[in-house]
Image: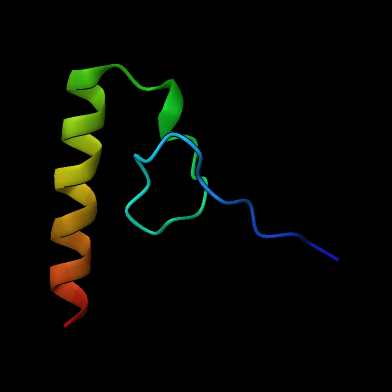
Length: 43
């Protein structure tokens, strides 16, 4: 059984921990932009 892990750092756009707490500021901004692009392509 797997547990959902809530994000405590507030960086995850999904609300679940995806490991972005360890990214530097520039890396975080890039990852967020890439995530937004992927989400927009789903629509």
